Image (cartoon, rainbow, N blue to C red):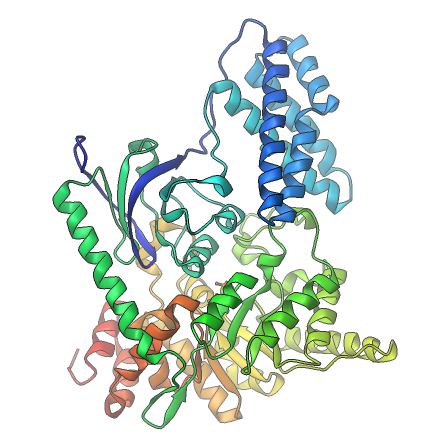
Amino acid sequence: MSESPEVRLSGTPASAGVAVGPAIVIDSQAVVVPDLEDPADAFSEASAAVSRQLEAMCETARAAGRAEAGDVLEAQALMAQDPMLADAVAAALGDGAGLGEALQQARQQIEELFAAIDDPYIAARAQDVVEVTERISRWLAGVDVPDLGQIAEPSVLVARALTAADTAALDPACVLGFVTEAGGPTSHVAIIARSLGVAAVVGAAGIVERTRAGDPVAIDGATGDVVIHPTEVTAEAFAARREAFEAAVAAAEQFRGMSVALGEHRVDVPANAGSRDDVERAVEAAADGIGLLRTEFLFLDRSDAPGEDEQFDFYSFAGASFSQPVVIRTFDIGGDKPAPYLGIAAEENPFLGVRGARLYREFPEVFETQVRAILRAAADTQICLMLPMVSTVTEIGDLRGWISEIAAELTARGIRHEMPPIGIMVEVPSVALVADAVAPHVDFFSIGTNDLTQYAMAADRTNTALDEFQDPLHPAVLALCERTVAAAKRHGISVSVCGLAAADPLGAAVFAAMGVDKLSVSPRTVNLVKSAIAATEASTAEEMVRTALAAATADEARSMIANPTRSP
Ligand code: PEP
Ligand code: MG
């Protein structure tokens, strides 16, 4: 397949599937702007070229229906030609700085200026300054910036890191898969890859350095294997893996639209979704409703928060797509999901900071707008409202009270609405530990094993150096899940799992055995999970849970789930 020697790397599996194709490399490392004879001239040529490039990208984005991305690109095209930038660069050059240094100083100056203005729209422009000056530097250094929305040939994307917005802009028809050096299996980039049905490997150290544009690359998103310049034998082996994966997906098709049970206990398999396309994919997979609608994706990759009517349309569309419940999670911004226009203060430890529901008091109008849209949509469809990242009963009481006030206001204004069932994500250990005290205050629990694992194991979910601590089937995490499920049963409320562990066949088996009512997974895995539940032996379910909880390590727990009657 290739003349160059084969290079094998290993990363973390992030989205199942096998891909072989030419690489597109995005190297986001800082570039070195060369010393030029006439730096002022070089700057005006570069800024004009970058502005034209951005205008062309803006037109393409608008033609493809990505209106918000188009607006951002248009603003950036204007900024590349803004006299404020030109003046700041000229002043720095006048002070004797080289062009690279001048661009750096201009960027800092404008960024600081924007950051000091208390307006979320202007704060978002600070991010645009960073992106525009970076683009100009790359143009001057002769380094291309590929436009991810415009990849023409089916390719494997190789990058140090991709933002959630980058990944959302990808056309799955042209991206066979992606490999990144950064990001963990539950990072939001990986979540989007799974929902797009694109194979992905993260944490592949050294991949960017070793790959050139156009090099053939083979990846297996289930094992984390990455091969650059695969030999003919390797390419054939990857083709065989792809066939096996596709055969398993095809075999699971027999469960489409069927309900499955473990013994007498029925387990629904709804889908996780973050966009209209995801909702359509979930309908296609005949999912049992939506178990987690990640609304924060509606808030990313744009210059201001979505309005009430835009949200109402989206939630009504999702609700009307199913006869089963659609669980809408209020925005979970923070952690690795930034929304620059909100102007959230930078924190030392964003995953332990003002994230999810903790943000609502800082942005009351954003929360109130969203809740109004959800309550209005609930008048006609089976919608449930779910709160992310809550950690105390007090917080839940406050948020419920606030939602009731919003409902009362709608009533006073004569606006049609309905109070939906209100549940919470159980993703902070404190909530799982006092689940019995929490249950009377909510209508349902949904266990978020991605965050629950990160917080129980004290391991940042995006840090690939901590992979050994990230297994959600570690007995410590399973104990928190079991405690939550038992409390839900005692209080007669429904309990789901919507983290990545629900899609792991062993995870699906053990959660079903614990008595979980729903496993919410990416649309593409709905039928695979149904087949995993159907293949689980009901007679040993109790033994499975007991022995897995008694295990000392994640590996031991996995082995007990696979063979519940064997002694550890
Ligand atoms: C989780 O934490 O398990 C979860 C489903 O939420 P998210 O991955 O969006 O944080
Ligand atoms: Mg979470």
